[in-house]
Each structure stands twice: as structure tokens, then as C-alpha cells.
Image (cartoon, rainbow over all chains, first blue to last red; front, side, top):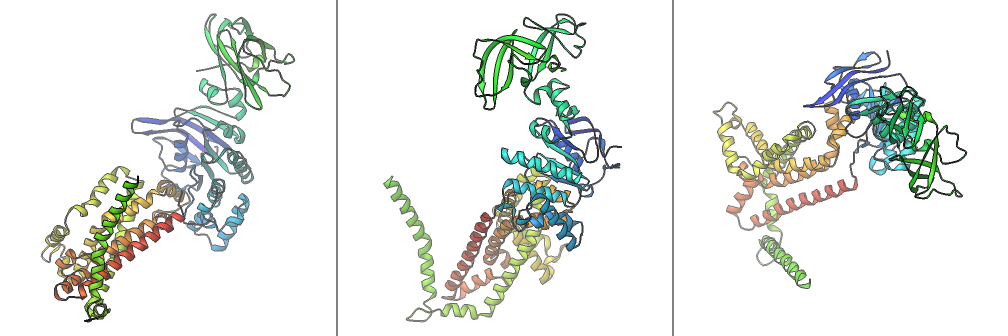
Length: 353
Length: 262
């Protein structure tokens, strides 16, 4: 049995069902992110694991033990909150020691463990400070140390980086991941930021309207989105309306271009409209590009975004964006120019609704 | 603009004259006990009166008990309402405002009806019981101020998240309340305490009708029978109130220096 199992979890608040038949198995030491827009149910699932909410149906197992009926204080789970939730009346040392004191540990053991945790987060020099004397990033590190001090079996993080500025978010998420790998603790991380989820997770659960639309590695989620929602939520995506040319040969028509797909079209007949997804970074205008498929279209606009140049091209009634890395001597496509976009047929994905 | 400023200063001047002239007059009168010169004889007479010391001490004790038991009632209640039943906040606010609306004399007559020596709960059947009743009535009188100050202090902290953070670290309710919540609403508790102290020290109706030896009835007795001592007592009563308000300001300023963001 996996270490953390969510079996058929459902949750309703009154007539509204916010989590619908959620299944998930997480292995020991795994780092799993729940990714989705606001209101998709990801935090509700997290709170049910923590014991703050009771599932309307379904069971949660941690290390083979059914968590039903167990109070939050009995589950040995660590949690880091979005709003840090440090106790304002306690110093850093006392905050980290809180769980250990509640557990009845001896003073020497508490001292040793707290110092170990503060060393782990690199803040041993701030042990006498109070939360109001520290920055947001420092406070969140202390919150992490406090959650890890009692050696929990599972670590939950509820959008811990949302309240921080962009630079701190990037450095702190790396730090969280390194600490998690060092300790080998099973971790569930809730976020609405796809970059966070993609960069630090072993697996990602993309949630939509209370359900898990797709569970997979970051590469699988990004390169092989299972549904239209996953495809559009994770990364930027072009959705192209194509006409099925020959279902048996797996060919479609986009404008005047006939393209053979690598993956099966599915149950479509000739003349049907099918949605095809293409990532902006998959295409190239370069003559030396190695893609086996080409689309010819007309440039609508070009936007200089710094390291990336984004060009919009009209092809058979579809507007397709594609990205190129910026180079100082690169001649940018101009509106009205006819261009040929090259990419690999394997980059085209049939979108399932 | 100049005319607006002039009228503003005029309003302030009239207000100051209205409040401070009688006070200055009272103080000046209290210094006139010795014929022909100013002296603190009236204050000496007050402080050397055994009844003053007894009633002042009694009211101080009642104030302290009111603050302790009031806070033991109000802090958990405000916490519970904020955490579990936020929809009850309007009901709580209504209930805590009732003592401002219902006259003290009506409240105390209600008490005498319910808790007299012939009733099922005969508080007035003994001195100790009557003192308990007096403390309960003072808690009722101070409800609007104590509840509001504690509730306001709780708004500055994220009660729900702090509670959840403590819970998930293994803490039970008493630990959460006394180690995580109470210290963080101390500014509100102290603010309510000082207001309560000022109210209790000057309260007359409850203490008089329950026939307790409190400071309020002593003030009235001295006022009815002596000349200069009542003025001295009035100045002392004002000083107590201003001291309480000054400590309140100090506590408020101290709490602003240590913002408690959760």
C-alpha cells in the first residue's frame, strides 16, 4: 500500500460539492503538488488530509492507518500555511519549540532539535527575534522549521509562497525542495502557480472543479496534457481548429496545409472539426529547423518580451502564437509577411475535452 | 479657511472652558479647608478616614475580581464566536450592548428579585453571596467595553490560522487559548481591564442597593455630610479615571509597536 492514500474522497459544503471522487496514492518520500485555479478543491483536499475538514465520503490512509476519527492533533502531520501563522508572542526559538514542548520533550532534547532545525533553514542567528522583526521569506522558513521539528510523517504546504515576492518565491521553493529531499519526507504542496509545481514536484495533480483531471510527472503534464483544461492551464497553448482529411491515414488540414499526426485522431470522420494543441515554443521560423511538418501563414504581430520574441501568425483562420529566443542580430518577422512555421508532427496533440 | 480655523479653535476653547473650569474650581475649593490659606487638609482628612481606606480597598478588590472573572468569561466566548460561530457576532454585540440600554437600577432590582434570600439561588442571604452578586453585576456593566476591546484585539490576529497551526502541532484547547491566543489579545484585555477598573471604582447604584461598602456609596455619603472633603474625593476620583485612561493609551501604543500579524 502507498504511504498516503486518498480513496474516493468527496466533500460537500451544503448543496455544493467541492471535491468529487478524488483518488490519489502518494509514495513515501514523494513530493506531490496539487495544481489548479482558485476554487478547484485543492486546499480542501489538503485540509482533509490535515484533519481540519472531514470528508463527506471516502477514506484517507497514512502509513496504512485509517485517519477517520483521528483529530488533527493526533495525526502527526506538519503544515505550512500561506499566511505563515507564526505565534506573534513567541520568538523564533519558541515557535520552533512549540510542538516539541506540547509533546512533552525534555528541555535538552528540545534545545538540540530546535538548533538542528534552525541550522537546516540557515537562521540560527535569528533565534531570539520575533516574527514582526523578520521578512516574509524568513518567517516562512521558520514556519517550515516549526512544521518539521516534531518529525511529522507527512508535510503539507498550503500555497506557502503566495505571499512572497517573485525572487524570494523562486529561491525559497528550491530551498523547500532541497530540505524535503534531504529529510525524505512525504510532501503535498498546494499551488496555483504552474512554474512552482513544474519545477519542484515528483508528480503533479492538476485539479479542476473538484476532480483530478490528470496525475503525472511535470514532463507528462506539460508535454502530454490529457484534457483541454490541463493543456490550457499549464503553459501557454495554441488551440487550432483543424479539419479531418483522412482518419485512416491520421491526416488533418489546417488552411491549405495537410499534416499527418503521430497519435491517433480518434473517433472522427472526414470533414469533422478536431481541436489540435501546439505549444508556442515547439515551432520555429528558421530555415535550418529540423521539424518534419510545416505551416505557411501570414504574420499578424510580433512582440518583443525580452529573452523571448512572440509572433502571431494566421493559418487557415487560426491564430497561432509561437516563441523564439531573442538574438541581437535576429531580423524579426513583420506584420503581413508570409512565413513558414516548422515543427515536429509529434508536437501536435489531439485535445480531449 | 482662516474663518474655519478660527471657529475650530473657538469650539475647542469653549469645550476646554466647559470641562476644565468646574474642575479647576473643584480643586481650588478642595484646598480651602484651612481658613485663610490653601492647604491639603481636606486630602489629609480623606486619606486618614478609615472608611475611605476600607471602601477604596473593597472597590479595588471588586474591580480586580470583575476583571479576572470577566476576562475568563469574555475571552473564550469572543474566541469561540470568532472561530466557530461567526454568524453569532451580531447577537453577541446586541447582548453586550444591553447593559448600556438598561438602567443599572433596573438590573439590580432584577437581581434582588431573582437572587433574594427567599429564592432558589439566595445570593443575598450571605455577605459572601452578595459580594459574588456584586461582581456579577459589575461584569454585566463592563460587558460592552470588555467584549469590544477583546473582540477588536482578536481582529488584529488571524485567530483561525493560529488555532489550526497550534492544533496541527498537537496542542489541545487550553494550550491554544492560554499560550497562543490570550497573549496576543493582551492589549485588548488590558484596555478592557482599565476601563472596567474606572467604572467599578465610581459605580454607585449596584453597590448602594446591594448595601455593600464600596467607594461609590462612600463618595455619596461624604458628599451629603461634609463640605471640603467631597471636592477632594471628586478630584481623587478624576485622578483614578485619568490614570486608567493614561495606562490604556500606553498599552495601545505598546501594542502598535509590536504588530501581531499571523
